[in-house]
Length: 122
Image (cartoon, rainbow, N blue to C red; front, top):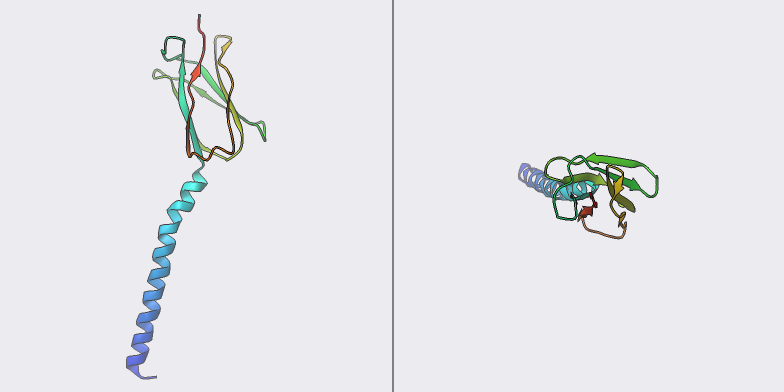
């Protein structure tokens, strides 16, 4: 093999390597996004659409029965990021009063699910 052919082959191998690395780099964010899971978020409101400060939101994984909680702040919002694709039940509680329990299905393919929870505080 002549030095010219060896240089051409080395160039082709380097170009192929760069193409493979470029494809892998562009595919990685998609895989990473899917691994991060879904986001369940929303607000806890009273009957007049005011935030229910210090309410507690309970999120139950119906497969494992693991429960996560979130204490509501001044703006009334809650967030549960990084959730697996399984069924969940979510409700809020404040001073012995409870919202309706809402379900989030494993078949809901949205990456972000918004659910408001209402508590009758009166």
